Amino acid sequence: MAGHRETVAPRRMAHLDRAEALRLLGSVSLGRIVFTQQALPAIRPVNHLMDGEDIIVRLHDGATLASVVAPADTRGVVVAYEADVIDARTHLGWSVVVTGYARRVTDAAELARFSNRLRPWADAPLGDAALRIRPDLVTGLRLTE
Image 1 (cartoon, rainbow, N blue to C red):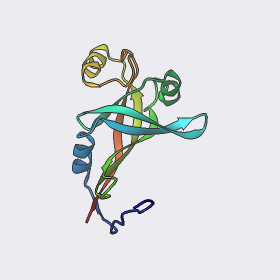
Image 2: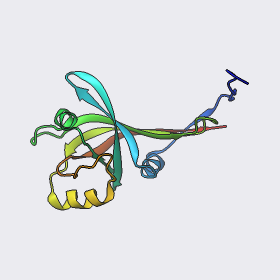
Image 3: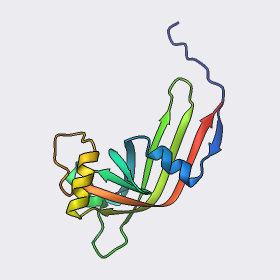
């Protein structure tokens, strides 16, 4: 029937503990980084992998990288990182948000190791375009029936 939308009953939200939230984050390779660009909030979809509890993000856009990377003598730049898997039909799934400090990955051995594990979106070498996000605040929720 044209224009008919299936009604989905309201879902319950269950909060996830830190370990489960980070485990779920590690089960996917795509997320969104939230940062400040020209004093305004910005968001970009990016590939990621987990290195222990840290999130390693691959960035392709030089301007984006420049806005996120802090001077070498600081703790880093505060960012948020979000990933989720929520079924569009059933509205069941989960969402995880991490807030922490992001710093550029500069160690050549680490970059080589991450380059082999991060699938690129564009045909470009990883080079120095990787960030390490150290999670300070980790929140997650699971949508259930």
